[in-house]
Amino acid sequence: MSDAPSIIVGLGNPGAEHAKDRHNVGYWLVDDLAGSTGFRADQKLLGDTCQLTIKATNVRVLKPTTYMNRSGQSMRRAMDYFKVEPKNILVVYDDLDLPPGTARFKRGGGHGGHNGMRDLITHCGRDFLRLRIGIGHPGRKEQVSGYVLRPPKKDELPRIEDALLEARRSLDILFGDGLEKAMHYLHTATAREDVTQDLGPAG
Image (tube, rainbow, N blue to C red; front, side, top):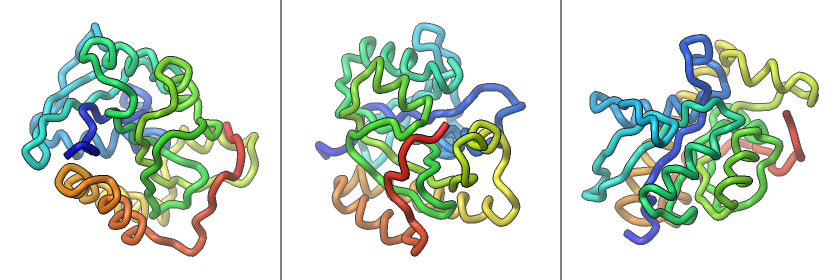
């Protein structure tokens, strides 16, 4: 399937102190994807990696361990080492502009104020596919830094987990039937009336 990525990158911050943060939902999805296979440290890629088969397609999974604001260094190394273009990479990350319970595919675009995405675009360009997991917005820009580095509230967590489950299912569709069908499934399955788009830069 031509739409299927060669590398899936999950964004987050390493360390047990960050494991439950909203900023780590990208890690959450790829950890679930890896399952019992697990990850191994790869110093040359500045991250943890594993290799999986999804719908008969081999795919590498990368968790940058450079901290969020330097994620692009790890992805750039993976692109160069495996000779992969940005268009063949899927990046999973938290998105303030989507409410908890939503997830969206998107090709290209800006960083939306996300420090990890800013660094990816700096080092790798902007033509990669994104899988945006909604975490909601605290309301004011100055609250963002603390907000993303804390766990979701009790009423938010089940909605985020539901969206991650649907996102995981959408990956099987992506690898089996292509991006258009995966996008239709995910955007329908996680549709919410309070979805907002392009609210501008935030933390």
